[in-house]
Structure formats: structure tokens, C-alpha cells
Length: 250
Image 1 (cartoon, rainbow, N blue to C red):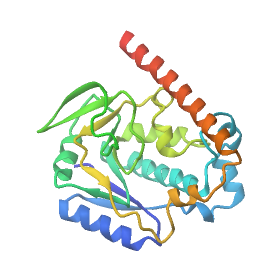
Image 2: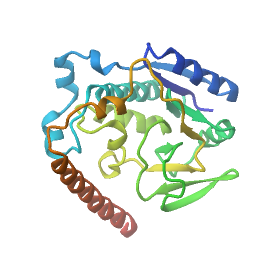
Image 3: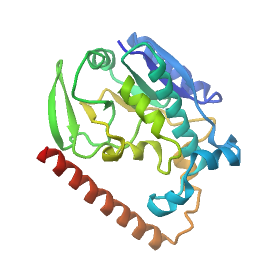
């Protein structure tokens, strides 16, 4: 089985304890990745890794410091997988929960295959539209038409991890949003059905991205932000439709 990596901020000891207990109970080997505390980043480092200008032109909203730290944390996980001996690895954020199929599914996903570069272990949509699917033991794996948001748990090949780490900086979208733009990353993103991972306890000593986002003003009026979001979503849908059409045409 590929190794698993848990992204964890040092202050979130309770989250780490829960994650460790879940993986140990499942018999899944794991390593801790020291998360990047976004609010502690110096301004020059933020400017180096975050393209605020492109975000203003093409992003859905300005990134907050925890989102920047989150992206850098996933880059650390990708670099660890790219430098490892295994042909891939699994990445978990420390607020995940898992069902009793996790270990069996991770073992199957660790076997050689040619269908995907990244595989999601969680989706908010229980019945997503698929463009391709195949059996995965007693379960299924498919390529979703629209890549699910959220990187709470996923697998990635060593080659794909190296590719993402090399291209990531500077970034202008949140890390999970970036993975939806598969025509930019060049990755084939799959989804395990049913997903073995769910969202766990959100309590955190460092706060959550959602709580900071809700407390941060966008700089736009409510109507202006709503219109901006509609334009962003329309553009994404248009580009996704074109990409899937080109895939079908070969």
C-alpha cells in the first residue's frame, strides 16, 4: 500500500490525534506533514507564492492567508510523495473521517493502473455525473465530468505529484479549486464510489478557513460579488464543456 501523509498544523494536536487513531485502526501507514500557518507568513513570502494580480483578473475571490498556507501545505505533501520510493501516495487533511472500507480501497488504488493521476476519496455529491468508470474491487471508480471540490482526502501518483509541485508557484486560486481546472494541470482526476472519506470534526485551535473567509470582506458589494461569482462559474462551465468535448473527439 502507498504511504499516507496527514497535513497538520502544530497547534492542532487534537486533530492529529484523531487522524492518527483513524489510520492506525485501519492499519494504514502514515507520515505527518507539518502544515504551513498562513497567518505567520511574512509579506515577501506571500508575494512570492501568491499572484494577487492574476487573482484579481481571474480568481473567484482574493485568497486569505489560511488558504495560502493550505496550498503550501499540499505542495509539501506533493514534494514528499515525489521524493519517495513508492509510485504514489495518499494525502489527508487532518479533519477527515473514514469508514471501514478505507484500507481496502487504498490497497486497491495502490495497484498499477492507467486510468487516473489523482483520485478523490471524498465528494459532496453522492451521485456525480461520470464520463468513464471501472470496477474497483467491490466498488467503483470513475472520472467525474466536474471534478469535486475539496482535498480532504486523495491519492496521487508520484509523477503527478512532481508535476503539481513544479507548476504550483505562483498560484492564484485555492488549492482545491485549482485541481478542478484539469485542462491546465493535465491530470486525469478520478473519484472512488462510494467515497470512503467524510468530513470530520472541524474544531481547530488555529481556526478554520471557512471562519476566516466569513469574517473577511471581499471589497465588493454583495451584489457585485454575486455577479462576479456568476461570471466566474459561467466561464468555468464553458471551459469545462469545451475540454470534455475535445476529449470525446480524441
